[in-house]
Length: 344
Ligand code: NAI
Image 1 (cartoon, protein in one colour):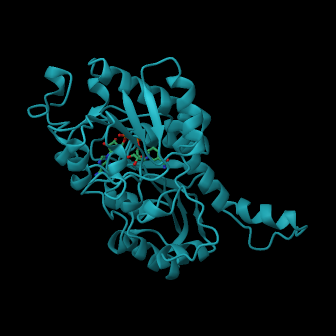
Image 2 (cartoon, helix red, strand yellow):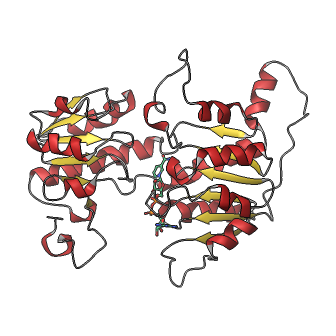
Image 3 (spheres, helix red, strand yellow):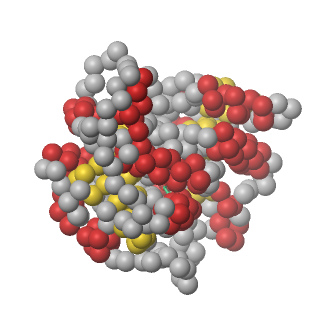
């Protein structure tokens, strides 16, 4: 099984190389992301392995299919960057549904703690022997209300972390967990009552720009917004307006709607063309990491293990239905996965 591996980073090679030794899998690592300009590199390969910012549009899928690629192996959970409808019937799509929900939930809290207690500012100050405390005042977390949107694997761990700090937790999910001890509320109530809002739902048609000028208007003055999910959940222009009007007190972002060509890359020394990101970074109450929440040793190891397992099972025709995705998944009557162990 020859795999074209796109958007390769040094830590990917480290975790994958040790696992493919002594297997029938041959990986060719490519630095560029998979998109319409680079898809030709995949000619002659059986499968492609991609990450969050590869752009697998209908055109890319048609080209992959023409070139004999049979499967796409996502080394991530989200699949919003793949046109699943275009892939259906042509190319099987596998993902890694969970690699370390702890990594992401812990990073969300790390971002918030850093921002709230101004740790990033204090770190820089003390390195220059500036021991002043001016401007470093934070808030107690204890007793504050946190609104968690999406109570899946990551959201639930984040809820437990918040409870550990003595926060009141309210949550919203399109599919609330029945008989759980999670205190569900309507989205409107969550926006109105939360001191801190953390996003842990996927990017879908319904969730795109769920944080916008109308929902920001509902929020408390001084609200903190944390997004470790997908950039498209937030309308960045409206977010910026909310910060400028002093409605939003602080913002912690690990993802950004237009991150595709920027995050994961060293752009220092380049002129930043994205004026929205430029302004966000310039704000004293905005803390940004570049899609780093997943990056722990445990997560990298799990990503590599599950991806290699997906490739092996596909190669040996032992389909792992659990990890295949198609645009009909979730619709029992239409997705063949439950019956045939594969989506088509
Ligand atoms: P999950 O699938 O376990 O949970 C997602 C939850 O969102 C589910 O409970 C689902 O019912 C809920 N949901 C779906 N549509 C919704 C809607 N319209 N409104 C509210 N809730 C809705 O996913 P998991 O593992 O907890 O991941 C959450 C998100 O975190 C992923 O979608 C992904 O985008 C992001 N992520 C970010 C990473 C990073 O490094 N920054 C790494 C891994 C995931």
